[in-house]
Length: 367
Length: 262
Ligand SMILES: Nc1ncnc2c1ncn2[C@@H]1O[C@H](COP(=O)(O)OP(=O)(O)O)[C@@H](O)[C@H]1O
Ligand SMILES: [Mg+2]
Image 1 (cartoon, chains in turn purple, brown):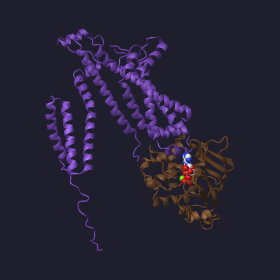
Image 2: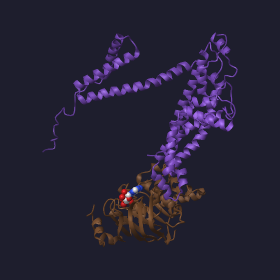
Image 3: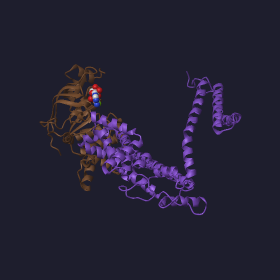
């Protein structure tokens, strides 16, 4: 053996014939044409076109790959196209919701919509506006305010209860009580929101007289929905705090409760805070429980403890189902869409806040 | 400097996880101001046993202990003894470095003091931080970045930070469970040097898998063994380190230290 005896590898055992890089693109273009032809045959429609094109693409690319590249590559190409197709399908509802909310909501959305209430706005105004005799008036300020107050109160109730419950479950709970709590939290997670609403309505009926409706009752109803979400997400976050950190604290002679407050919670806080934000986003759009607890109103009410209080979901519902003017419902429908847009913006903002919060609170430079 | 009167006396100790007996019938004396090494094959209960010496064992749900552990004649497992107070006197360093990720280097060192709610003046805390970090041979490496997170240090530095954190509360005894097993040889040597330094002020107990390490750093060595899986670990013999490594009285010890065993 000499130094240059590097075995001349049989060229071709590692390389393989491949389809050219542009093959998928070209196939897709051709399949689109085929899809158009196929769908035209059965009477053109977009779904038919997409399905036709997809099927044509999958068949062509799989067969081509099978012939040129071999069996494994063919399966790979087929599954790849299936995954992309599934991804596209999953995006359809999302984009179409965003699209229709934007398209229908933007005309009425704006500063005026967010700063005025519906007080003293009647069907007559809407009819005149529709005939071009007067400007469109009437906004959702009272509903935005109501949603803000009710959700804030619900958060104020749910976060301490939920967080403490999760701390109990992770750090202290052993045996029966912990299992019972976990079980009931699971049950609560599945409670239909209308049931939570009826529960709060009945509770306030018993405590303060039948038919009592106010923002606080709404907040209680939302808490019933929110607490299990907060418990669950905080519990998960606390559980992933490494046990080593707790032991490190104990070994320093730190009592357990201080270890929980000063070591475990700060380590988990970013996840907990973003979980709470997502829980808020989850309940901010609840409609049914608010309708039966907080009621409807067209005027501004900034006291959640007295009188009916409007919320954005209830506003959307009432404008869509009971337009101010029965004969010309369009202005009311536009308001409903604009309020829906407001709600979507709030939820998206909350989701962004959740990410931001997670990043802000995350332990710096942790590996 | 703490007075060297921290003799540990273990009498007939049985250690359980639930119904599983992990360590059986251990009696030993740990002299004040000495370094004692625990050696033995994996799973023979070294970690379990060392954790009973500062009542860390009972942190595991269902874990319990029978027998006595006396610190200067006082039973750690006595009825009125608060485990939190025990742990302040008997500190511990773990196998994997575990600095608190949310805290700076400085706050990590001060954790045992601050997290106990003590309020101390800045000048005082500065002094504690410097002394503890010097004591752990880390001061020169980190003195310019005390406010940076502790998790940004190398593994060996993190482990020395954990040692600094443990000695900042001024314990009398320091327990170390394989403190070097996650470290490179250079960091290991740094920690071994540190142990010889620390032994002037503390009673030290160290679990190690490394025979050379045991013979380098310790005065006394205890060999633990286990008869088979599911059986409890036992103390086979304990003697001066030199004797254990040259002329042990039990055959099993000789087999183990000479590498003729598992
Ligand atoms: N948290 C625990 N729960 C139950 N059994 C444990 C636990 N920790 C260790 N054990 C068991 O106790 C025995 C001794 O383990 P350990 O003390 O870790 O051994 P060593 O440190 O000598 O390798 C082993 O059989 C191990 O499976
Ligand atoms: Mg161990």
